[in-house]
Length: 237
Image (cartoon, rainbow, N blue to C red; front, side, top):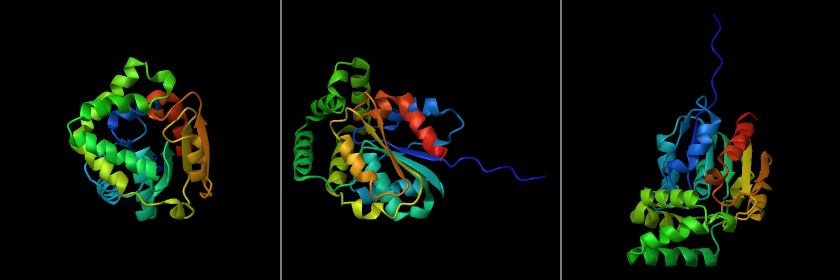
């Protein structure tokens, strides 16, 4: 009797800052039950290195990895640390830089506000700022963004902001990646514009850069069926 063919690798999905596992709900539903999905948290540690280590500690021996926004930065660090464990990589609405001086100043201001007890206001503002202008009046998307922020909470956001401050420039490590890579942008993303993803994809020989039309920074939330279709193609490569 012949051995059964191995199934597809498990897929680990990482959310972005102030995001939780539910950001992927529509994507996972569209991928279908045949995809073995794990959705770790990335709000329990205060450095990119520690977040990457926690994901690796809880992940299978080998797995496909997709990260959204801050989750994409953690994903690139995971590949840098343990390339033999990653079978393919998807990076959504993210960038590989260490963060500009303006970004770092912005993270510091957010941390100060949260420290003063303004978490609810910060979460409400972020829920709209991460959506494109045309969707900031969509009550369902805004409320889902706010609910995710509530799951992370003020302490989790402070840890994530410290993790943002720990970022290093990951561009020098990108050329070594040799698994199938999908770099996915939202056409209307004002947080991580498509130009950043083009720059991210260029040094990776195995990368494809794709743009989701009429979509902003929260691509898994805004366009889950389209994101799932792109991920399905990537998983089949």
